[in-house]
Length: 402
Image (tube, rainbow, N blue to C red; front, side, top):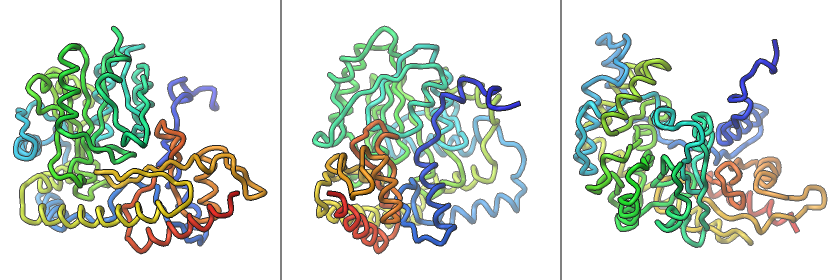
């Protein structure tokens, strides 16, 4: 048997560019090369002590058996309480489904609602896995282009221009990976007014970066009265509580869709890890330690954003906006396309990323992976000293391209 046995589904599936670049960086590090990895999308903070202690207690209490498919009721209720407390969203416990990360929650939704050739509207730049998840569900990706000048935001009229009878889902991500874009309450209200005219379109709102928001209060499109029954909120504990490895995400959805996703998850993975759920339950509980941890992390990210933004703006040809959320910058690097050091010519952002990895030993992610080939994604989720050094390395190497 060989590769000829593989399905078209797998052969047509792209490898995650962020994971691929991280793995390549780790291989170079293993060779003794000092790589500054700005490709990875996770906080460099450690999980809070009170969360880790809750997991240890779960082990001591023998909470080590199969968990219910949609998650422990205590955690589902805590999530419903959190949504009411933090977001003003009223959900019953049975509308909450806990999954193995927000990525699975999102995949569950798409696989549960998309039929072959159904269209999903996706603003670009987008998170790398969105298009391939849609294609796995046999849906069709409909992209909406944005520019750095407009902070990578779309307007309601752009959405309406591409709606067809086959449009099934609109995929919204705020704060955004990779751009850091945050939609205001007024902008979300404009989307809500638009979708009043199209009651058969489901809005999937990926809010995993909710708490890493430099504007202050996070706004969800599910908060508008006419939208709640047509919105699925996707979230989790990975980013806000530095719990990427615990693999706990969740959705809040209309009951019919929550039940469908429970049915699907029951066949694919069953319930998420019991110990991780107990850790997430602690993270969801409003504690002084929780608030302090978030405050410390957000302040650190804001400072790193500002330092990196200012240093990027000192590099010839680099154009970047100041994002208001997440922990990424998404600068336009097209100035360097067509330039050469006499040996290597840069044709696109992928060429530039591998050039910088080879010459500057700094790992970034090409914009092609996010549907925006003129840009690169830079994660500032690392300490300030290393960020400053990375910008100095990049500036020095780019001077070699004429």
